Length: 178
Image (cartoon, rainbow, N blue to C red):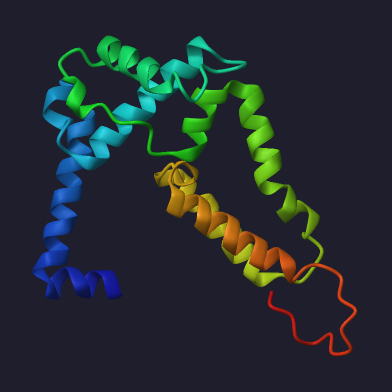
């Protein structure tokens, strides 16, 4: 009910809906030069380019250092009408790692990233669950771990939440940070 009311009452929200529809419509066009200035369309182009990089290097990837050059080659191949100033890295941590490190590296990343959640699965840790949901969702729309602030956020808050799952010798076991 709230989104409908917002749509009717707020012109800025209504404009955002129209702009998003237009942006999504640009993805469906065959000419990428039209969609390169639109956020969603540009992200979809980067996803397709990253998948093309991975398709050519399935097991070990191209390496993080060579990913930008390999992405540029796929952009030229898939979207020849786009110029290099519109090339972006895949705004998805999962695809970024898959293209850079291949299937083997991606599996290592997933195990390393989500093993603490598996370790704490039987413990009552709502803060840890909330952090993992937040981080896993952010990985879908940004390459979170490739920025200093993203990496700091992930490490700090996951370690804070994990600390609450450790065994305690405290006399008052009712208070835990997680």
